Amino acid sequence: MKVSLENIIQQILPLPQDVLKEVVLEFQHLEYPKNYFLLKPGKICQHLWFMTNGAVRSFYTNEQGKELNTWFSLDAQIITDTTSFVKQEPALESIQLLEDSELYAIERSSIVNLLQKHHIFTLWYIKLVEVHYIPQTEDRMADLQFLDAKQRYNKLLDLYPCITNRISLGHISSYLNITPETLSRIRAGKL
Amino acid sequence: MKVSLENIIQQILPLPQDVLKEVVLEFQHLEYPKNYFLLKPGKICQHLWFMTNGAVRSFYTNEQGKELNTWFSLDAQIITDTTSFVKQEPALESIQLLEDSELYAIERSSIVNLLQKHHIFTLWYIKLVEVHYIPQTEDRMADLQFLDAKQRYNKLLDLYPCITNRISLGHISSYLNITPETLSRIRAGKL
DNA sequence: AAAGTAATTTGATGTAGATCAAAAATGGTT
DNA sequence: AACCATTTTTGATCTACATCAAATTACTTT
Image: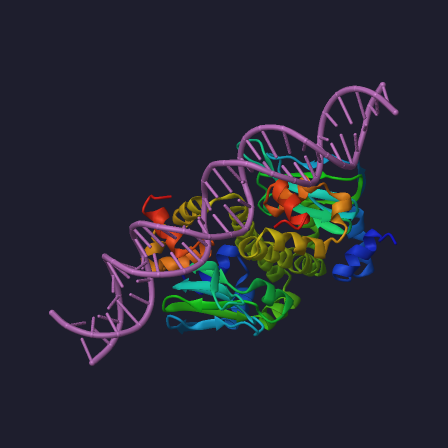
């Protein structure tokens, strides 16, 4: 059951046919292989990506060169480096595919143009931010502040029950902000 | 140097005079005493508050009845329970004044009306979210994931150098996600 | 299938910060 | 000033999770 780009857009907020057509034209359909980088640090994030299937991680690389995952997206998700995208500043993080993935990309400049041109599109964009961005980040923030390692792991499993079939435990432990050793012990019921 | 409501609004994105007037009329000027609750859990957050001076905390109350601070706002800040406000769901957290404070409040319904009515106002609202909400939350999230207790404290001091004159160390430690004992030791240079 | 590399697990030990208990400092009230 | 409540500090101990090292398992590539 593959979703079309039109479906994704209309599900956020239905647009009139003429605007929808114009919006769709601004998207580029892309397929990239596993390990491909959508964004590298230092570059300004110019895109918003709508993934239809695949898997992606966002990560920082710290001073010691260690990669620390900040986010996963599996299948139907919206992807960007929010801070770099909205402030048009160099990104601090990388975005990398963890599976061969299929995406639709729209540029920041196209969004800005559409926002200027169509009142209804600004309402669509507000809905996108309010529904697809804000609750997720608030939730992640609360998890990091209030939950211990085991609770964070269980919550991730609730969200993506099959994530361990698709994402390595090393990547998962990094996102959970624990070591691979600790995740292994949690999974073995030793913690 | 007190800022007027007009200044605050125009600083986000300048609006034409007629729209500005209409927007200003939707705000209510409020003064509340220290300890007053702007929001309690279970209530739907109907307001966006623009504080001109004062101090506020947001906090969760956990199952054991312990209050865990999630945010501070001092002086010129925009305040709301974002998730409750955008999803119009019952709030999980409380918002409470920590000083006598002066605020301007606008209701969700007024925002929704203005968004429907004025294209320029939607652009103003997007700017508000993109500049005043997104970078802050992304930053807080990174702090919680990557910094240790001492680094989090020093970063808070960078942001609000005089915060310890206005907010109790108990509240600060809660926001930093550490105990008052640990904060005391950090400040004494013992950690 | 064998070989080599990377991912995961297991065990031993270390540490940042929590918890518990009590003392000291601070602040508001009469 | 004296009193009470609250906040902050200090010290002793405990714990969740990190770190380090080695063994095991799984995954590629020939």
